[in-house]
Length: 282
Image 1 (cartoon, rainbow, N blue to C red):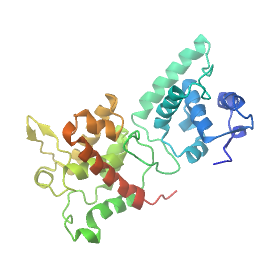
Image 2 (cartoon, one colour):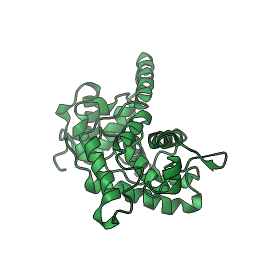
Image 3 (cartoon, helix red, strand yellow):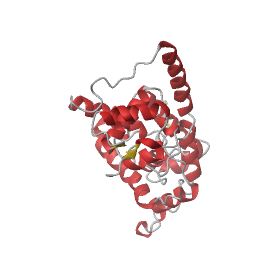
Image 4 (cartoon, rainbow, N blue to C red):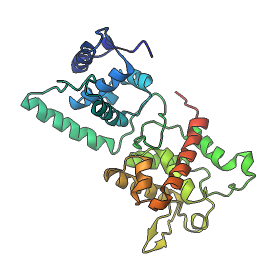
């Protein structure tokens, strides 16, 4: 990644911010991976939604990081290194009218993120500490192929052939879009909670997420309704601050705290199927 991000592909305030970041370093007209992280964080401070800009795909390629994680990444870097790029005098102070406009735009973006999918050039890796907001326009066909690997690979010898999760790629993708949650974690939770769709509650109650009401497992009319319920629950937890699989696992609100490590390991294992088998069509 020695080539870096060419500042000349940027425009307007974004280009000014990039120049400010570069001027604190080598002034070569390009941003390194580390500088891109600082640059994107400063864009966010200035009310610039980088994910909507045409040059963001280049940033994404260079960083291979989830946009939603960048703010936390840069914040931790700055806390550890007092001499880091953006520690000193990096905050742009906007005039009062511009501040008001920025706040309005920030509100609009927050509302939009509840329903929109951010279209990135390729799926980003979803780790235990990755933000679980949706980040990609998934191919139903390719998504289904991953589910098929989870359920019908020869090594399972037909054990999951009657799984209620067979053919549910569309339901997972749509629930993810509806609640702005990465559908990979919805699949992983479903697989964990339903023994890959063959548990008694999955077969008799269409309950693949373990939802209980009044101490009893809830009976869903369809498996799709249960998938929707999982997405809704995960979104609720997200709004409470549990924004990663790790935080959800250790919150005690989805699985018992004593089972968090095992649950998280299983979730990560299922998500790993997508890293191995999902074929990007872009």
